Amino acid sequence: MSLLSKLKCVTIDVTGTLIAYKGELGDYYCMAAKAAGQPCPDYKRMHQGFKTAYTDMAKAYPCFGFAAKIPNVDWWRRCVKDSFIRAGYQYDDDTFENIFKRIYASFGSSAPYAIFPDSQPFLRWLRQTGLTVGIVSNAEYRYKEVILPALGLNKGSEWDFDVFSGIVGVEKPDKKIYEMALEMAGNVRPEETLHIGDSFRKDYIPARALGMHAVLLDRFKTVEAQKWSEAGAPVFPDLVSVQQWLTKGMDDETVIKVAGNGYGSIN
Image (cartoon, rainbow, N blue to C red; front, side, top):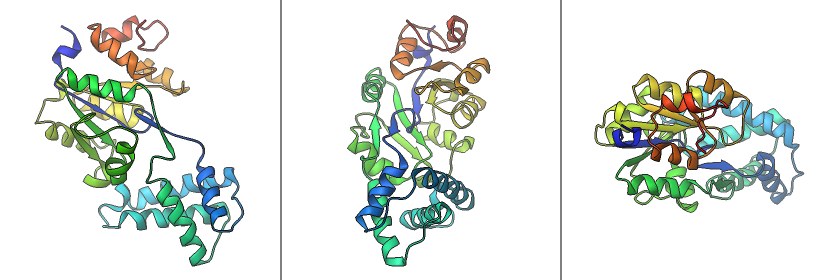
């Protein structure tokens, strides 16, 4: 019996799986600074500053400040301000607010993102086969309300339900976010569900620990992907390959055996 025939639900990650960032972080920070009459920040310093600031904010106030009841815009204001400071840039309050508003607006739109060409067809195919499709993502509410719809991914046509960490207050790799997904899908059993993501730690491990089927995408040919495969995870280059795998009737154990190069691609 093929895995597809056993499934009732498919859950899927967003960034790196359905969509990707377009350009560099520095592009948007530079445009915002120039619009406020300031020099363009150094890209490398800005990237490192943001990486550190975001990590610290996420640790202090996880799920975009959900438990602390910090408004989304204020969470990002703190993060962006700290990013500039760590990169060596400090502005007066009015100048910073001008810069921040542009950055916040940019990342709340579809401008910094690109949808993978196989994302919409794959999601629609899943729903046409009768499967319930859910989004499971460590993202804030604007992904659901603005970004994904602007990219052509809409609730009702591409997915049926969603679990965004900034909305529910739980984030991957916590198994609770997957338990929420199973409940939202109509209390389907873990063994009736397939999860697709791009992180071994956040997607594959917790989903499998709960008893779900799981596969990983390696769209950017990362070094880590070979290790994922060696650890037993079916790894595919794109969603087209996942669809081929599902329709050819191979279960998630068989795909590892037939993947001669360590990847679960079907030719």
